[in-house]
Length: 172
Image (cartoon, rainbow, N blue to C red):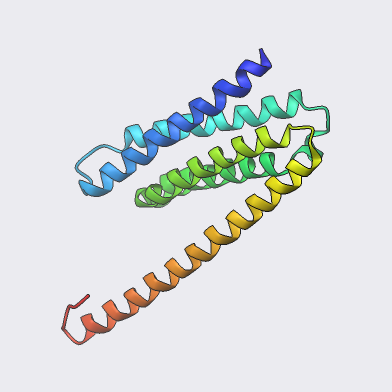
């Protein structure tokens, strides 16, 4: 039964995150003309499935729960769940639904990444584990650097836009 849950819960979480991603993107494109009920509910559904997946993994593991969360797959899943819980709490209070366009795909990527890491981590080959960890480290470094460069480009664009707005010339 636990093996079945270890495969069904991640798939349900991925489905929930996909629906939330498309729902938030649709709401952003239509600028509030659509309801945010579907993206919120599907994101919460994905988050609950993700958290249940963590509980099932912790209960079926041979190591303690604390030791488990020091390993890569559980850490990635825990980060995704915590980011989603924080987002849903802030979305309710601060009405920042537009941020769902970033948070839902981020949760989706972290869920997929942790699922792949979870299956690679279960292998008995120690060299494969080290190679996969190096691959994940390198991938995270490249993605992080890319996001840093993108953030720099966006900030330069905002500065140029603000300067042109102050001069009453809108160019970009």
